[in-house]
Image (cartoon, rainbow, N blue to C red; front, side, top):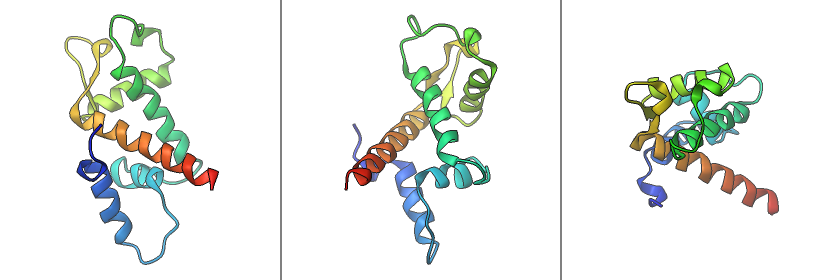
Amino acid sequence: MENISSNIYEQEYQEWLSSFESIDSNRYDFLNVKKWNFCLCGTPKSAVLAVKEMLDWCASDIETRGSVYNLPNSQMFIVYFLNHKDYADHGGSIDSSFLTNNGKQLLEFINNALKEEEKDEKI
């Protein structure tokens, strides 16, 4: 696993966070607002978890994961989103999507956010 300080998302998050004098924000807000241009209505973490689910799908073995065409439309849309944002790429079909380096770093950033949240809940 990469050193967290070399993760481009962690670096951009720290810069984004330091631009506010006082804000109750987290990595989910950062991804929704700064990286994806979404608002913070509803539950931003839910959007991040939906993206993470499909990042995990793209990272899984193409031979055993099942076809994207068998997924619900909302999940297939997220795979298109991942490809559009350069988190994933594919060959002749969206079905063969795989993570780019950018996508691997994003998945690591989200996994670290979840671990940090879990650790904070135990305190």
